[in-house]
Image (cartoon, rainbow, N blue to C red; front, side, top):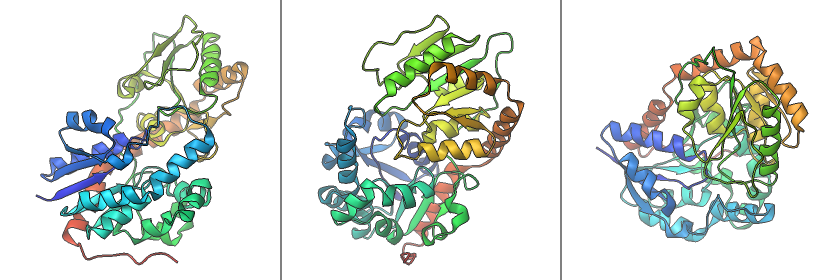
Length: 377
């Protein structure tokens, strides 16, 4: 049995796949301790893993409504904070291996400084991290604070991408970071969709557990669109209430929180924001996806385009009027090609054992602690 430290943060869609990898490692007999934000303690305890709060993460709260500059500043701090780096170095000392969320670049460096073989966990397309993120405001600001994410990721012992190699553009471009990374597939559970034929189509709506400007207005326009159609709608808010009351049509339900694993097998369509976890959980059920990205600087537009290119969905701007949303929903529900494309993707995703492959990669670090990959130039 090995001691595995998992360093993470409550940033929404990164948490469920991380905990599934923790479950896989624990099932193999390893002792798993999650190091993260205090708010994660209850969820980690329910999963049966050890938990240690990181005091240097107390500043972070993804559910708080923030301006774009404030969000960039806090995400930069998450990437480059020296106090967090030092705390992670102390907390991981003595572990046999560590998995560190790629958002926490200085923490990757901290675990490495403790001489712990460390794998960086990329929880969406590598293309986003090495291009948009590193070259964008957060990456530039992190470098100004003394942490280059690419250097930190590259000097780790391993890089695990929990995404689909066929849809991630980085896998084809073969940059040095891509060549040194391992795609294990999305860690999302799914089952074949079984829509209720006798009932109107069920359309599930999920626009992130992180608040973005314009999100309430997008929910309202989607609700108005669904209210004009012969469908059943479910708006899931992820415990993030809108900043003003919604006008809810009679054929639409609003749920503060819902288990997508219970909704998706009965659904015909997802309208989502393009978050990796929600999108690929829908695809794992063979569910077509309409993506309405909530933020242009995140991975959401890239994911939406890739799903559309794969023939399993469509993309709309978050400012799309209700009439346009209604037209696209109607077209998608009638699109046999999109259903077939989503079904093919779903079968491929369900056949993969992504959590097992990720655990294999971590176990290799334990057994080969001196193995290192030279940093890309």
